[in-house]
Image (cartoon, rainbow, N blue to C red):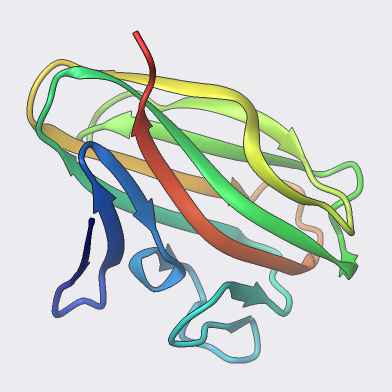
Length: 157
């Protein structure tokens, strides 16, 4: 198992073909603005408030197989704006690939892995797998979400 870091603060743990992407290894829109996010050196990234949730990442896949993409998140008890709001976990191969997605709902007090059913992406050869967590459609202000990590891993055959 190795912890990798580049000049862009891309941080993840790789164990064989499994990637665990830590919050500092994700691209969090408004993440550099402390009015919207708290992103510590270690531990979960915490959403203070946004109306546009966009958290994305990329991993380079070298083996042809089917991978799943998921996020481990927690909505704090005082979290707001999540009831009745769809959150999407999306993934695609390459920059121009077609997105596949799963819709999820979050509620305060939940510590969950989303999506609840595997988001399966078939990779046929070495390529970049782009993925993300999005809620950009409702226009609601949301807060109290913790991003613990994203996971990209092979699905069993």
